[in-house]
Image 1 (cartoon, rainbow, N blue to C red):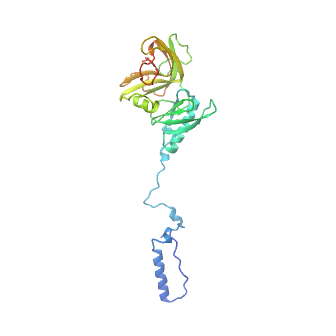
Image 2: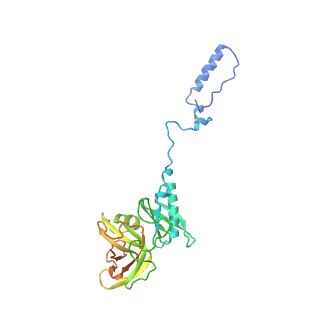
Image 3: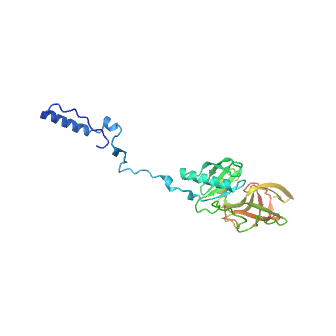
Amino acid sequence: MAGKEKPFHTPLVAVSALSAAALILAGCSDSGSSGGEGASAPASSSSSSKPSPSVKPSEDSQGQRSESDYPRFSAGANTTEGFAQNVHGEFVRQWVKTGKTDVTVTASSPSTGLTYDMACSGKETVHCTGGNDAHVYIYAKGVAGGGDGTAQAQGAQGGGGSADSAVAPGQHRFSGVIRSMTLQQFASTYDPNYPNSVTPGTNIVFLQLDSPQTVTATSGDGRGQSTRQTNEVLLDYSHGPSQSQYAGRDGERVTIDVPLSQCRWPSDTRPPVGALGCEVG
């Protein structure tokens, strides 16, 4: 039997037929044994390293994953494009290696020369946050949004103003990334601390600003104006399909000019909590 030590035979001393027969019987008994030291000893034959024909080697699941599974990304508030690109690169390497999207990655910032830890979570849209309140969004194949890092979008991509043009009187310019999602997605990926109950069928569209903006606008109760700081601009909140021109454009980087007469500070806790709301269609 392959893999077993050959039975040890005592040298033939006598040539009598009886002794020869006894040795032959003893040899047959040893080679047919299934136990003992010969069965448990390490195999010396090279054939023992081959897997049994009835057992297939397990497939390498890493071969089923690739960096193209998450091809696009976008930089959120307080985040440079270069840093977002490095976070995306570290994330996809972790994805290929582990198959997990809930991971922590370490990436360097070309603008500061420092490295930062970013905690990532999500499935189709992965949200990574960390460092100095940086935000990076990474999109699975087939999910709209973001870019591949080869070129950064300029302007409003379908609505709004140019980042280099003058702002008309009475208007305010906002630049950032469009977020279009259900309320369930918002509460699970963008703001896990959202205080309100989640109503199925509710959709939200907002602009996640590149940097906090200080705006003077009408108070939510309609009594005068107030000046506050906001990290987002709520564009649409609807119990049903959103009719906003920005719906379904999650991840697009835009610049929009909005008449402040169409903006209002909130008087309730609609998401994003405390964000300025503007009616832009």
